Image: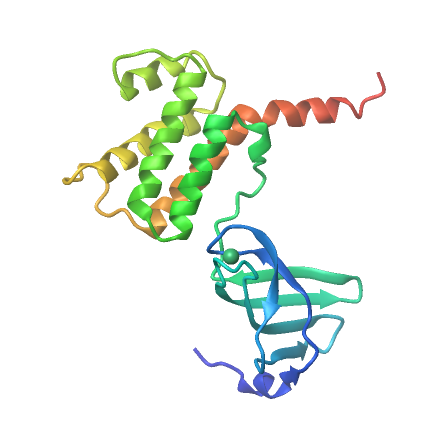
Length: 221
Ligand SMILES: [Zn+2]
């Protein structure tokens, strides 16, 4: 692939450090990252109203001090986009506060494991989240497979999402055993997609009703 290197000449080193706020990829806290002495930020204007800044920062937490890179896009209206690198899995459109506590704890731990490249541990936490859903919905059965079968009549969810709960169970089973029977490999891609599916399941179960209620409130009487 040809890269137009003429753009690189337009990058300017800037001395005044801009404030960078984001989620620390190690400790998971939302922090204002601290600048590194003698480590300049770089600035680039796209010829229009967009300014881009690039640079390095440290997490301010003394127990963490994680080194991150950032990319910030700004226009005349202020900051519009900040990317912290390495990224943290973002629970898009999912509010953990709206979930039952046990489920929120489980998916949160699955995400922390993913962010730290502990994919086997993440798969096990994804499976545990499915188990918690069955428990909270009072699904019964001697094992998770039969509890998931029982769950079908107790929840309203699309068929593909319901079926994916079995797939996530298989993922967790393979993660917990020496010999895998379903997935050839359990790595970043498998867990990322697993988490995306899990988020969709949780949204369908715990957020759609709330969204509908909010929408109804906008009606006149
Ligand atoms: Zn940190």
